[in-house]
Image 1 (spheres, rainbow, N blue to C red):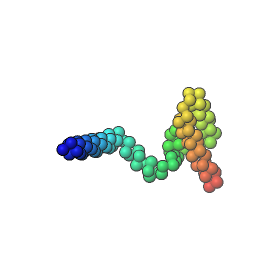
Image 2: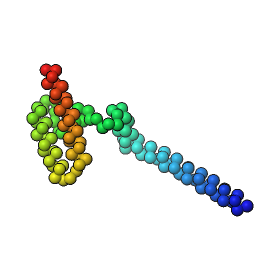
Image 3: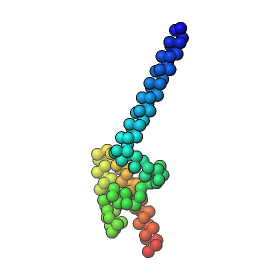
Image 4: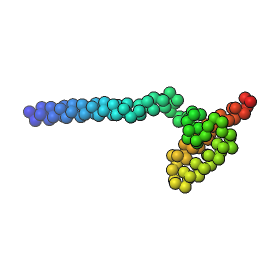
Length: 114
């Protein structure tokens, strides 16, 4: 008799936990779709999970336009990199560095094709 009660308590408890997990997952999906996180995640999957920046994103990070010279890009890079080095934001430093790398490739490609 005690074994039966214990088994039914275990089954009911696991059912309650499974339902709570499923409900929490549905709520997390709803929150993600409302905040745009799902769209951002989908874009990252399209680009690949390597974290490669597009040229447009790199220009936005450094605050330069398509008409900016390479010297302007380097000046912006140096300024932003040093500011983030002083404030200790390694994440922002990494973003700035990756943006410079991306634009460096783009400027090298335009040099060779010109």
